[in-house]
Amino acid sequence: MAISDYASHDALGLAELVKTGKVTAAELAEEAIGRIEKHNPALNAVVTKLYEQGRAAAKAPAEGPFKGVPFLLKDILGDYEGVPTQSGSRFMSGIPATRDSTLTARFKKAGVVILGKTNVPEFGLLPTTESAFYGPAHNPWNPAYSTGGSSGGSAAAVAAGIVPIAHANDGGGSIRIPAACCGLVGLKPTRGRNPLGPDLGDIMGGLIHEHIVSRSVRDTAAMLDCTHGHETGDPYYAPPVERPFLDEIARKPGKLRIAYSVTALDGKKVHPECVKGVEETARLLADLGHEVVEAAPELPMEMLSGAFMALWAAGLAVQIDVHAMMTGRTPSDNEFEGLTWGLYEAGKQITAVQYQMAIAQVQMMSRILARFMASHDVWLTSTLGAPPIKLGTIDINERDPQKAFAPVIDYVPFTALENATGQPAISLPLHWSADGLPVGMMFAGRFGEEALLLRLAAQLEEVLPWKDKHPKIWN
Image 1 (cartoon, rainbow, N blue to C red):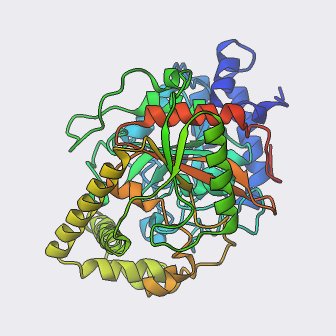
Image 2 (tube, one colour; image 1 turned 120 degrees about the horizontal axis):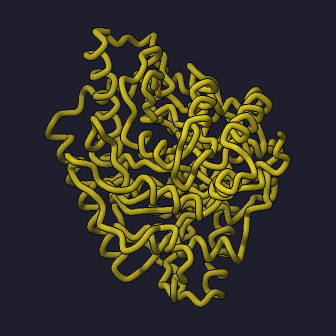
Protein backbone atom coordinates (compact mmCIF):
# COMPACT_ATOMS: atom_id res chain seq x y z
CA MET A 1 0.00 0.00 0.00
CA ALA A 2 1.13 3.57 -0.64
CA ILE A 3 1.68 5.64 2.48
CA SER A 4 0.87 9.12 1.30
CA ASP A 5 1.96 10.82 4.53
CA TYR A 6 5.18 8.82 4.93
CA ALA A 7 7.47 11.87 5.03
CA SER A 8 5.26 13.77 7.45
CA HIS A 9 6.26 11.33 10.21
CA ASP A 10 9.55 11.42 12.07
CA ALA A 11 11.29 8.12 12.83
CA LEU A 12 9.47 7.47 16.11
CA GLY A 13 6.22 8.28 14.33
CA LEU A 14 6.88 5.66 11.66
CA ALA A 15 7.88 3.15 14.32
CA GLU A 16 4.57 3.76 16.07
CA LEU A 17 2.71 2.95 12.84
CA VAL A 18 4.58 -0.35 12.67
CA LYS A 19 4.01 -1.08 16.35
CA THR A 20 0.25 -0.52 16.06
CA GLY A 21 -0.01 -2.57 12.88
CA LYS A 22 -1.08 0.30 10.64
CA VAL A 23 1.83 -0.40 8.29
CA THR A 24 4.51 -3.06 8.05
CA ALA A 25 8.25 -2.62 8.04
CA ALA A 26 8.28 -4.05 4.52
CA GLU A 27 5.85 -1.38 3.35
CA LEU A 28 7.99 1.38 4.86
CA ALA A 29 11.07 -0.06 3.17
CA GLU A 30 9.34 0.08 -0.21
CA GLU A 31 8.26 3.66 0.43
CA ALA A 32 11.86 4.66 1.16
CA ILE A 33 13.22 2.72 -1.83
CA GLY A 34 10.70 4.46 -4.07
CA ARG A 35 11.87 7.84 -2.81
CA ILE A 36 15.53 6.94 -3.33
CA GLU A 37 14.75 6.00 -6.92
CA LYS A 38 12.69 9.17 -7.39
CA HIS A 39 15.05 11.72 -5.84
CA ASN A 40 18.55 10.28 -6.06
CA PRO A 41 19.14 11.26 -9.70
CA ALA A 42 18.80 14.90 -8.61
CA LEU A 43 20.43 14.59 -5.17
CA ASN A 44 23.14 11.91 -5.50
CA ALA A 45 22.64 11.26 -1.79
CA VAL A 46 22.75 7.44 -1.81
CA VAL A 47 25.87 5.88 -3.33
CA THR A 48 25.43 2.23 -2.32
CA LYS A 49 22.02 0.58 -2.53
CA LEU A 50 21.31 -2.24 -0.10
CA TYR A 51 17.73 -2.92 -1.10
CA GLU A 52 17.79 -6.69 -0.86
CA GLN A 53 19.49 -6.66 2.54
CA GLY A 54 16.94 -4.08 3.67
CA ARG A 55 13.98 -6.03 2.38
CA ALA A 56 15.20 -9.12 4.17
CA ALA A 57 15.70 -7.18 7.40
CA ALA A 58 12.22 -5.67 7.13
CA LYS A 59 10.69 -9.14 7.03
CA ALA A 60 12.76 -10.53 9.90
CA PRO A 61 11.63 -10.33 13.52
CA ALA A 62 12.92 -7.16 15.15
CA GLU A 63 12.32 -5.05 18.21
CA GLY A 64 13.58 -1.70 19.43
CA PRO A 65 12.09 1.79 19.51
CA PHE A 66 12.84 2.31 15.80
CA LYS A 67 11.38 -0.99 14.64
CA GLY A 68 10.90 -0.95 10.87
CA VAL A 69 12.21 2.59 10.29
CA PRO A 70 14.11 3.04 6.99
CA PHE A 71 17.70 4.11 7.59
CA LEU A 72 20.92 4.90 5.75
CA LEU A 73 24.54 4.44 6.83
CA LYS A 74 27.23 6.96 6.03
CA ASP A 75 30.04 5.70 3.82
CA ILE A 76 32.58 6.59 6.50
CA LEU A 77 32.83 4.35 9.58
CA GLY A 78 29.43 2.83 8.75
CA ASP A 79 30.80 -0.71 8.49
CA TYR A 80 28.19 -3.26 7.40
CA GLU A 81 29.38 -6.85 7.11
CA GLY A 82 29.90 -7.84 3.49
CA VAL A 83 29.61 -4.29 2.14
CA PRO A 84 32.57 -2.02 1.31
CA THR A 85 33.14 1.14 3.34
CA GLN A 86 34.83 3.27 0.69
CA SER A 87 35.08 6.71 2.35
CA GLY A 88 34.45 8.37 -0.99
CA SER A 89 37.81 7.17 -2.32
CA ARG A 90 38.66 4.86 -5.20
CA PHE A 91 41.70 3.71 -3.19
CA MET A 92 39.34 2.25 -0.58
CA SER A 93 36.85 0.78 -3.02
CA GLY A 94 35.64 -2.77 -3.41
CA ILE A 95 36.77 -4.38 -0.14
CA PRO A 96 33.85 -5.61 1.95
CA ALA A 97 33.76 -5.08 5.71
CA THR A 98 34.41 -8.26 7.66
CA ARG A 99 31.89 -7.35 10.36
CA ASP A 100 29.52 -4.65 11.49
CA SER A 101 30.89 -1.72 13.44
CA THR A 102 29.63 -1.51 17.00
CA LEU A 103 27.47 1.46 16.06
CA THR A 104 25.95 -0.35 13.08
CA ALA A 105 25.13 -3.27 15.37
CA ARG A 106 23.46 -0.88 17.81
CA PHE A 107 21.51 0.77 15.00
CA LYS A 108 20.24 -2.65 13.94
CA LYS A 109 19.31 -3.53 17.51
CA ALA A 110 17.33 -0.28 17.66
CA GLY A 111 15.19 -1.76 14.88
CA VAL A 112 16.11 0.32 11.83
CA VAL A 113 16.08 -1.16 8.32
CA ILE A 114 19.30 -0.24 6.50
CA LEU A 115 18.71 0.44 2.79
CA GLY A 116 21.97 1.99 1.64
CA LYS A 117 25.04 4.11 2.21
CA THR A 118 25.33 7.84 1.71
CA ASN A 119 27.60 10.18 -0.20
CA VAL A 120 30.70 11.72 1.42
CA PRO A 121 33.72 13.78 0.33
CA GLU A 122 36.92 11.76 0.06
CA PHE A 123 37.90 10.69 3.61
CA GLY A 124 35.43 13.24 5.00
CA LEU A 125 37.94 16.07 4.61
CA LEU A 126 35.63 18.85 3.43
CA PRO A 127 32.71 20.94 4.73
CA THR A 128 30.95 20.04 1.47
CA THR A 129 30.07 16.66 -0.04
CA GLU A 130 31.89 16.60 -3.36
CA SER A 131 34.27 13.90 -4.54
CA ALA A 132 35.77 12.71 -7.79
CA PHE A 133 34.72 9.16 -6.94
CA TYR A 134 31.03 9.74 -6.19
CA GLY A 135 30.34 13.19 -7.61
CA PRO A 136 28.67 15.96 -5.61
CA ALA A 137 25.62 15.60 -3.41
CA HIS A 138 23.02 18.29 -4.09
CA ASN A 139 21.09 20.30 -1.52
CA PRO A 140 17.34 19.61 -1.75
CA TRP A 141 16.63 23.27 -0.91
CA ASN A 142 18.55 24.33 -4.03
CA PRO A 143 20.55 21.70 -5.98
CA ALA A 144 23.17 24.26 -7.03
CA TYR A 145 24.27 24.51 -3.41
CA SER A 146 26.26 22.27 -1.11
CA THR A 147 24.70 19.88 1.38
CA GLY A 148 27.58 20.56 3.74
CA GLY A 149 30.05 17.88 4.66
CA SER A 150 31.04 15.35 5.39
CA SER A 151 27.66 13.76 6.21
CA GLY A 152 26.07 15.56 3.26
CA GLY A 153 24.50 12.53 1.61
CA SER A 154 22.79 11.57 4.85
CA ALA A 155 21.55 15.13 5.37
CA ALA A 156 20.20 15.44 1.83
CA ALA A 157 18.30 12.15 2.16
CA VAL A 158 16.72 13.13 5.47
CA ALA A 159 15.89 16.68 4.37
CA ALA A 160 14.22 15.38 1.19
CA GLY A 161 12.01 12.96 3.14
CA ILE A 162 13.67 9.80 1.81
CA VAL A 163 14.39 8.56 5.35
CA PRO A 164 13.59 10.29 8.65
CA ILE A 165 17.04 9.73 10.20
CA ALA A 166 20.46 8.70 8.94
CA HIS A 167 23.92 7.91 10.28
CA ALA A 168 26.41 10.78 10.51
CA ASN A 169 29.76 11.45 12.14
CA ASP A 170 31.69 14.56 13.03
CA GLY A 171 35.43 15.28 13.07
CA GLY A 172 35.32 19.03 12.54
CA GLY A 173 31.63 19.72 12.16
CA SER A 174 30.50 16.92 9.86
CA ILE A 175 27.19 16.30 11.67
CA ARG A 176 26.43 19.93 12.42
CA ILE A 177 27.50 21.48 9.10
CA PRO A 178 25.20 19.31 6.92
CA ALA A 179 22.39 19.75 9.46
CA ALA A 180 22.82 23.52 9.14
CA CYS A 181 22.92 23.41 5.34
CA CYS A 182 19.90 21.12 4.98
CA GLY A 183 17.62 22.39 7.76
CA LEU A 184 18.00 19.49 10.20
CA VAL A 185 18.80 18.65 13.80
CA GLY A 186 22.44 17.63 14.19
CA LEU A 187 23.86 16.69 17.59
CA LYS A 188 27.54 15.96 18.02
CA PRO A 189 27.61 14.06 21.32
CA THR A 190 30.25 14.24 24.01
CA ARG A 191 33.52 12.47 23.22
CA GLY A 192 33.17 8.80 24.11
CA ARG A 193 29.36 8.86 24.31
CA ASN A 194 29.09 6.60 21.26
CA PRO A 195 31.81 3.97 20.74
CA LEU A 196 34.05 3.50 17.69
CA GLY A 197 34.54 -0.26 18.15
CA PRO A 198 35.03 -3.05 17.76
CA ASP A 199 38.45 -2.18 16.32
CA LEU A 200 39.04 1.50 17.05
CA GLY A 201 39.43 3.35 20.33
CA ASP A 202 39.62 6.89 19.02
CA ILE A 203 40.41 8.56 15.72
CA MET A 204 42.64 11.60 15.22
CA GLY A 205 43.27 12.07 18.92
CA GLY A 206 39.60 11.98 19.85
CA LEU A 207 38.28 14.43 17.24
CA ILE A 208 35.76 11.99 15.70
CA HIS A 209 32.27 11.59 17.17
CA GLU A 210 29.34 9.46 15.94
CA HIS A 211 25.58 9.96 15.80
CA ILE A 212 22.79 10.82 13.30
CA VAL A 213 21.01 13.67 11.55
CA SER A 214 17.24 13.93 11.98
CA ARG A 215 14.22 16.14 11.47
CA SER A 216 13.08 16.11 15.12
CA VAL A 217 14.72 16.57 18.49
CA ARG A 218 13.00 13.49 19.89
CA ASP A 219 14.49 11.24 17.19
CA THR A 220 17.97 12.56 18.00
CA ALA A 221 17.40 11.91 21.70
CA ALA A 222 15.85 8.46 21.27
CA MET A 223 18.60 7.20 18.97
CA LEU A 224 21.24 8.35 21.43
CA ASP A 225 19.46 6.21 24.03
CA CYS A 226 19.94 3.24 21.68
CA THR A 227 23.60 3.80 20.84
CA HIS A 228 25.39 5.41 23.76
CA GLY A 229 27.48 3.59 26.30
CA HIS A 230 31.10 2.56 26.43
CA GLU A 231 32.39 -0.72 25.09
CA THR A 232 34.98 -2.95 26.72
CA GLY A 233 38.42 -1.63 25.86
CA ASP A 234 37.40 1.96 25.12
CA PRO A 235 40.22 4.41 26.00
CA TYR A 236 37.72 6.75 27.67
CA TYR A 237 33.99 7.25 27.90
CA ALA A 238 31.51 9.99 28.60
CA PRO A 239 30.06 10.67 32.06
CA PRO A 240 27.04 8.53 32.98
CA VAL A 241 23.55 9.85 32.25
CA GLU A 242 20.85 10.37 34.90
CA ARG A 243 17.88 9.24 32.79
CA PRO A 244 17.04 8.38 29.17
CA PHE A 245 17.63 11.23 26.76
CA LEU A 246 14.09 10.84 25.43
CA ASP A 247 12.81 11.51 28.95
CA GLU A 248 15.02 14.59 29.17
CA ILE A 249 13.24 16.42 26.37
CA ALA A 250 9.98 16.29 28.35
CA ARG A 251 11.68 18.25 31.13
CA LYS A 252 11.92 22.04 31.10
CA PRO A 253 15.46 23.39 30.74
CA GLY A 254 14.98 25.88 33.56
CA LYS A 255 16.49 29.35 33.46
CA LEU A 256 19.84 29.07 31.69
CA ARG A 257 22.73 31.48 31.42
CA ILE A 258 23.41 31.59 27.70
CA ALA A 259 26.33 33.35 26.01
CA TYR A 260 26.09 34.28 22.35
CA SER A 261 28.60 35.47 19.76
CA VAL A 262 28.00 37.18 16.41
CA THR A 263 31.64 37.28 15.32
CA ALA A 264 34.07 34.49 14.63
CA LEU A 265 36.60 33.62 17.32
CA ASP A 266 39.35 35.42 15.43
CA GLY A 267 37.26 38.60 15.48
CA LYS A 268 36.18 38.44 11.84
CA LYS A 269 32.60 39.18 10.88
CA VAL A 270 30.30 36.37 9.83
CA HIS A 271 27.65 36.66 7.11
CA PRO A 272 24.79 39.08 7.89
CA GLU A 273 22.27 36.22 7.71
CA CYS A 274 24.24 34.40 10.43
CA VAL A 275 24.32 37.52 12.58
CA LYS A 276 20.59 37.99 12.07
CA GLY A 277 19.89 34.38 13.00
CA VAL A 278 21.95 34.54 16.20
CA GLU A 279 20.47 37.86 17.29
CA GLU A 280 16.90 36.70 16.66
CA THR A 281 17.59 33.46 18.52
CA ALA A 282 19.15 35.35 21.41
CA ARG A 283 16.05 37.55 21.69
CA LEU A 284 13.81 34.49 21.62
CA LEU A 285 15.85 32.87 24.38
CA ALA A 286 15.55 36.00 26.49
CA ASP A 287 11.79 36.05 25.91
CA LEU A 288 11.70 32.45 27.16
CA GLY A 289 13.22 33.60 30.44
CA HIS A 290 16.87 32.71 29.94
CA GLU A 291 19.68 35.06 30.94
CA VAL A 292 21.36 35.96 27.67
CA VAL A 293 24.70 37.77 27.43
CA GLU A 294 27.04 38.52 24.55
CA ALA A 295 30.31 36.81 25.38
CA ALA A 296 32.94 34.51 23.89
CA PRO A 297 35.96 32.61 25.20
CA GLU A 298 39.36 34.13 24.53
CA LEU A 299 41.06 31.47 22.47
CA PRO A 300 44.31 31.53 20.49
CA MET A 301 42.72 30.47 17.21
CA GLU A 302 46.00 30.23 15.31
CA MET A 303 47.05 27.59 17.81
CA LEU A 304 43.82 25.65 17.28
CA SER A 305 43.99 25.74 13.50
CA GLY A 306 47.61 24.61 13.46
CA ALA A 307 47.02 21.79 15.94
CA PHE A 308 43.85 20.70 14.20
CA MET A 309 45.53 20.56 10.79
CA ALA A 310 48.39 18.49 12.23
CA LEU A 311 45.96 15.98 13.74
CA TRP A 312 43.88 15.84 10.55
CA ALA A 313 46.83 15.38 8.21
CA ALA A 314 48.49 12.75 10.41
CA GLY A 315 45.17 10.98 10.88
CA LEU A 316 44.59 10.87 7.13
CA ALA A 317 48.07 9.47 6.56
CA VAL A 318 47.41 6.73 9.10
CA GLN A 319 44.11 5.76 7.43
CA ILE A 320 45.72 5.49 4.02
CA ASP A 321 48.83 3.64 5.22
CA VAL A 322 46.86 1.18 7.35
CA HIS A 323 44.63 0.35 4.37
CA ALA A 324 47.73 -0.03 2.20
CA MET A 325 49.32 -2.37 4.75
CA MET A 326 46.18 -4.51 5.07
CA THR A 327 45.67 -4.81 1.31
CA GLY A 328 49.27 -4.97 0.17
CA ARG A 329 48.78 -1.92 -2.04
CA THR A 330 51.06 1.08 -2.46
CA PRO A 331 49.34 4.48 -2.43
CA SER A 332 49.91 6.58 -5.55
CA ASP A 333 48.75 10.07 -6.35
CA ASN A 334 46.59 9.00 -9.29
CA GLU A 335 44.24 7.17 -6.91
CA PHE A 336 43.39 10.25 -4.83
CA GLU A 337 42.08 13.75 -5.28
CA GLY A 338 44.79 16.40 -5.33
CA LEU A 339 43.78 17.84 -1.96
CA THR A 340 43.77 14.41 -0.32
CA TRP A 341 47.22 13.64 -1.69
CA GLY A 342 48.55 17.01 -0.53
CA LEU A 343 47.25 16.40 2.99
CA TYR A 344 48.59 12.84 2.93
CA GLU A 345 52.07 14.06 2.04
CA ALA A 346 51.86 16.74 4.74
CA GLY A 347 50.75 14.14 7.28
CA LYS A 348 53.72 11.93 6.47
CA GLN A 349 56.03 14.79 7.40
CA ILE A 350 54.61 15.39 10.87
CA THR A 351 56.98 14.18 13.55
CA ALA A 352 56.02 12.44 16.77
CA VAL A 353 57.03 15.56 18.67
CA GLN A 354 54.81 17.75 16.48
CA TYR A 355 51.89 15.38 16.93
CA GLN A 356 52.27 15.35 20.70
CA MET A 357 52.54 19.14 20.68
CA ALA A 358 49.26 19.31 18.74
CA ILE A 359 47.58 17.10 21.35
CA ALA A 360 48.90 19.35 24.13
CA GLN A 361 47.63 22.47 22.35
CA VAL A 362 44.18 20.94 21.88
CA GLN A 363 44.06 20.06 25.56
CA MET A 364 45.05 23.62 26.45
CA MET A 365 42.15 24.91 24.35
CA SER A 366 39.85 22.49 26.12
CA ARG A 367 40.76 23.94 29.50
CA ILE A 368 40.20 27.50 28.29
CA LEU A 369 36.75 26.67 26.94
CA ALA A 370 35.86 24.64 30.03
CA ARG A 371 36.62 27.67 32.21
CA PHE A 372 34.37 29.81 29.99
CA MET A 373 31.57 27.24 30.21
CA ALA A 374 31.86 27.14 34.00
CA SER A 375 29.97 30.45 34.05
CA HIS A 376 27.72 29.79 31.03
CA ASP A 377 25.36 26.85 30.62
CA VAL A 378 25.22 27.14 26.84
CA TRP A 379 27.12 29.04 24.15
CA LEU A 380 25.18 30.12 21.03
CA THR A 381 26.76 30.89 17.65
CA SER A 382 25.75 30.30 14.07
CA THR A 383 26.82 26.84 12.97
CA LEU A 384 28.63 28.25 9.96
CA GLY A 385 30.06 31.61 8.97
CA ALA A 386 27.69 31.91 6.00
CA PRO A 387 24.68 30.20 4.40
CA PRO A 388 25.42 27.10 2.27
CA ILE A 389 28.11 27.61 -0.36
CA LYS A 390 27.67 26.79 -4.03
CA LEU A 391 28.98 23.48 -5.30
CA GLY A 392 32.42 23.83 -6.85
CA THR A 393 33.62 26.50 -4.42
CA ILE A 394 36.47 24.22 -3.27
CA ASP A 395 38.94 22.86 -5.83
CA ILE A 396 39.34 19.24 -4.74
CA ASN A 397 42.24 18.81 -7.17
CA GLU A 398 44.37 21.56 -5.59
CA ARG A 399 47.31 19.84 -3.88
CA ASP A 400 48.23 22.76 -1.65
CA PRO A 401 45.86 22.47 1.34
CA GLN A 402 46.23 26.17 2.17
CA LYS A 403 45.10 27.16 -1.33
CA ALA A 404 42.34 24.54 -1.45
CA PHE A 405 40.80 25.59 1.86
CA ALA A 406 41.27 29.34 1.28
CA PRO A 407 37.76 29.94 -0.18
CA VAL A 408 36.12 28.42 2.91
CA ILE A 409 38.51 29.37 5.70
CA ASP A 410 35.88 31.75 7.10
CA TYR A 411 32.99 29.37 6.34
CA VAL A 412 33.66 27.03 9.30
CA PRO A 413 34.78 29.31 12.16
CA PHE A 414 33.07 27.52 15.06
CA THR A 415 32.46 23.79 14.69
CA ALA A 416 35.97 22.34 15.01
CA LEU A 417 36.40 23.70 18.52
CA GLU A 418 34.00 21.19 20.10
CA ASN A 419 35.74 18.33 18.31
CA ALA A 420 38.95 19.46 19.96
CA THR A 421 37.40 19.83 23.40
CA GLY A 422 35.05 16.86 23.19
CA GLN A 423 32.06 18.91 24.33
CA PRO A 424 28.57 18.29 22.92
CA ALA A 425 27.07 20.73 20.43
CA ILE A 426 23.83 20.76 18.47
CA SER A 427 22.79 22.58 15.30
CA LEU A 428 19.12 23.53 15.00
CA PRO A 429 17.22 24.86 11.94
CA LEU A 430 16.12 28.17 13.40
CA HIS A 431 16.81 30.60 10.55
CA TRP A 432 16.50 30.76 6.77
CA SER A 433 18.25 33.21 4.45
CA ALA A 434 16.36 35.67 2.27
CA ASP A 435 16.75 33.32 -0.68
CA GLY A 436 15.37 30.35 1.23
CA LEU A 437 18.48 28.47 2.33
CA PRO A 438 18.74 27.04 5.86
CA VAL A 439 21.06 28.79 8.33
CA GLY A 440 21.69 26.62 11.38
CA MET A 441 22.17 27.90 14.91
CA MET A 442 24.64 26.01 17.11
CA PHE A 443 24.44 25.49 20.86
CA ALA A 444 27.49 24.14 22.70
CA GLY A 445 27.22 22.65 26.20
CA ARG A 446 29.53 21.50 28.93
CA PHE A 447 31.29 18.15 28.65
CA GLY A 448 28.76 15.37 29.24
CA GLU A 449 25.71 17.64 29.18
CA GLU A 450 23.81 16.51 26.08
CA ALA A 451 20.71 16.30 28.27
CA LEU A 452 20.67 20.04 28.85
CA LEU A 453 21.16 20.76 25.14
CA LEU A 454 18.32 18.42 24.23
CA ARG A 455 15.98 20.02 26.77
CA LEU A 456 16.75 23.45 25.33
CA ALA A 457 16.41 22.15 21.76
CA ALA A 458 12.99 20.69 22.56
CA GLN A 459 11.89 24.02 24.02
CA LEU A 460 12.97 25.86 20.87
CA GLU A 461 11.36 23.26 18.61
CA GLU A 462 8.08 23.82 20.43
CA VAL A 463 8.06 27.61 20.20
CA LEU A 464 9.66 27.93 16.74
CA PRO A 465 8.73 24.65 14.99
CA TRP A 466 10.42 23.68 11.73
CA LYS A 467 8.40 20.52 11.06
CA ASP A 468 6.46 21.98 8.15
CA LYS A 469 9.39 23.71 6.44
CA HIS A 470 10.25 21.59 3.41
CA PRO A 471 12.79 21.95 0.57
CA LYS A 472 12.01 22.02 -3.13
CA ILE A 473 12.91 18.35 -3.44
CA TRP A 474 10.66 16.68 -0.89
CA ASN A 475 8.81 13.41 -0.34
